[in-house]
Image (tube, rainbow, N blue to C red; front, side, top):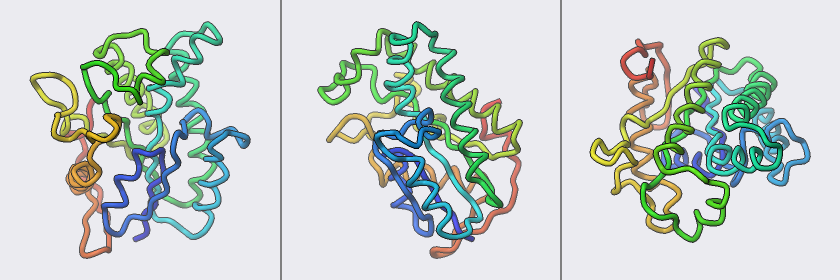
Length: 226
């Protein structure tokens, strides 16, 4: 079974999962996937990769850029609400998915909650000027984005999954401290994140033997938020 995982820089987690082909495009947004002239050229790059062979499954992992930066910028520029911008990003995201899916099965991955409740680091501060909200409001925005994605997946017959229940510290409500990459404070430690995604994939019915994957549909009610 051939699996392709595509996404922004957070999709690099899949390079640590054997048997999964991956394509990560730094700073690519869900909103920009319908823009052939985007700076990242994500649309063109993904279409070329998807067209290179027949994929049994395509995993898509976009939205962190939207919820961490873009939807705030759009609100300031166009005087629109966060909720409106989430809907716009997700609508364009799923238009792109419908365009590229062909005969492949689709799994859309929800984004992680924000990294930290503390002060923004220098890297994060570059985009934090758009963030006029406290941590838990921004967390709520990420979870709202995921809920909209999940609903769209239900309508389209796509699989949905996220790992927030596995990475959240119950005491702080943020990502567990030992999972955070100290180098940039933005991403998770890839090897640890890969183990967590492997656990979720197994729960979803994906099974790996060496580098080969199989899939058998499972009862998702206990691991996918209602």
